[in-house]
Image (tube, rainbow, N blue to C red; front, side):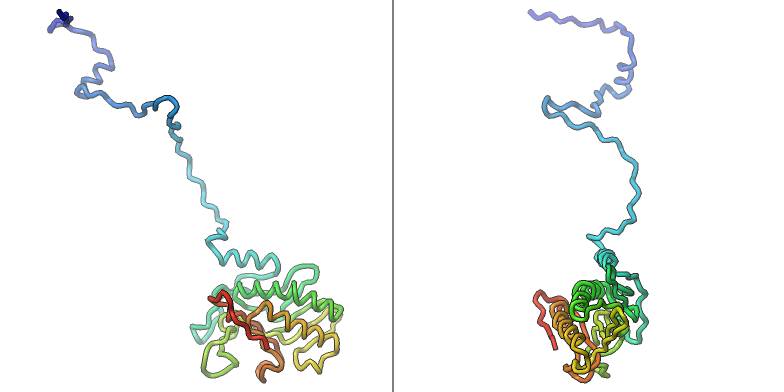
Length: 250
């Protein structure tokens, strides 16, 4: 026989705070906000909300190639952002205009015109002048280059100054026309036929012209045509969008 012990129906018991809260909830047992997991599977404690940190204003070079280009350029040269040049043709536009003033290092080279170029081309140009042309000048001429004389870099025009046809790379800040060099000690080299140069200058110019073909994809100068008889034209047009660009080295 089973015995059951029941409290009298009319019995009264004192209700504590927990009992009163339970009655107010309709006898629904509240679930705890957090229940411990079985041993060995403890959940980490809830993280305490942290105040928001201010967003850093330092440019992210991985997501901002333009900032990375200018940062790399200023490691080897004196350069600054430049406004977009005014042009009659709206197609003449520089992707990231900068003013290239000089290279850095123990033998800096100034750019007489204060070149306005696209940043990526300015970076290639500064590296070429500082690390290739300058050592060649010291070897062949016996003096470092103090100043590189050139055109302005950006010019809104068509190739070879023609009235029609494709725009020149100058229209995008991606070309440079070198017309001469000034060496420390006030000696001067004007680009033209090598027969008009002294032996040291002729040797330097020949070496510089050949070396430029390893850096740039278009190299035109004296002997190419009448339009390039007095300057050395350099650009990277054939490297745009090509893994293996062909080169013109004349």
